Length: 225
Ligand SMILES: Nc1ncnc2c1ncn2[C@@H]1O[C@H](COP(=O)(O)OP(=O)(O)OP(=O)(O)O)[C@@H](O)[C@H]1O
Ligand SMILES: O=P(O)(O)OC[C@H]1O[C@H](OP(=O)(O)OP(=O)(O)O)[C@H](O)[C@@H]1O
Image (cartoon, helix red, strand yellow):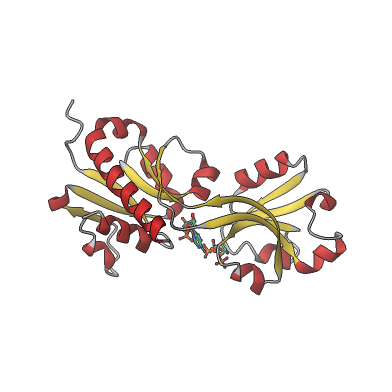
């Protein structure tokens, strides 16, 4: 088996991780110029690099990779933790840093006697990450009713849909501007390079080469601070 042949298909997440992902690939010597414009095209082939890029919703990246529609993809650890898809996590790319937190309205902190979670008893929790939330509350020995939402989670406790939220926080601005406070820091998340389990072997030479390049770039960026 020649494990270096064939076009490599890389799934790039649109949204927050899009630009840093293209920047990293460009630094590794890949031509990502065509993807940098404001085109609505979702599929790009760069024959000179023997690479094909597909542009996906961030939460769909693990699915494209699991099914082998992409050999590689870039996804947040938050998404990977939530979905538990059968993909190979190759590298922590160390950008897209955010944290999973439990948060509640500032006003309720006084009512519950402070930030301690245990004083809150049975709680209704809104989140985009029901699996992470459920596992967290179970690990605390707490009962929680999990309400799945698809975005703007911070709204839920402000209108009585939930007592608390489990969501990701980056700068903390969204929590602050909605008068919510962090009760618990659950887990950190950064972007990860993931691979399809079969194609990781089948295209091992190419993937290993790319992996080494990216790992060196990530290391260098980290040393720069
Ligand atoms: N405010 C943020 N700061 C830094 N990284 C973030 C932030 N929000 C999300 N991320 C990271 O970027 C990833 C993609 O988030 P983004 O907001 O672009 O898409 P999404 O709305 O979560 O995805 P989808 O459109 O598929 O539902 C997240 O999984 C997370 O790892
Ligand atoms: O701490 P901050 O820097 O304010 O960032 C946190 C916000 O970013 C994410 O939302 P996103 O923009 O992905 O929108 P969403 O609510 O539709 O998921 C997250 O769900 C928070 O709302």
